Amino acid sequence: MGLVGKSLIVCLALVLGVAIPGWVGPVIAEEASVASRTLQPKLPTAKGDKCVADTDVMRRNHMNFLKHQRDDTVRDGVRTKQFSLKQCLTCHAVNGPDAKPVTADNPDHFCRVCHDYAAVRIDCFDCHASRPEAAAKSGRSLKRPLEMALTDYLKGVSQ
Image (cartoon, rainbow, N blue to C red; front, top):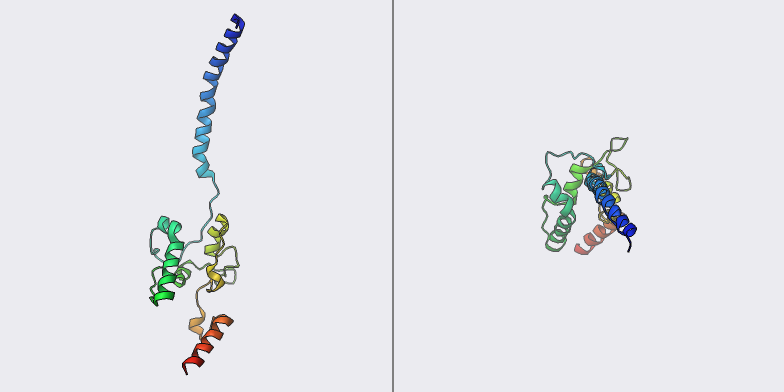
């Protein structure tokens, strides 16, 4: 390699040595600020004073709490309010333009906001009501037809 070739390599190394830190600095700064620029779901405000657990804990573990609550209730007959779906809906119901709580079919539903963002299907509301039971005050039943048929069957069996 001649003198020109060595000089070219040295010049290139000097240019890159000066230029790369200029490129790396903004890239690192940009990566650090990406988290602040990432779109996050805008959650509706809950109605209660405080949640049953810290926000970070609930965001990471709510599905586990609901599964355990389900298992305790269905298998063991133990009903508590702390992690019950009914209790969640009482505090986290979102009202629509008619001032009534929206169902899970509505994209503004509390659960749907995050689940849509994370592309996670909510299957709780395939069987459960997706809004608080306001009908309990009016005496009207919110039971689904299958649930009503099962209740009627069980009443008939017990007689």
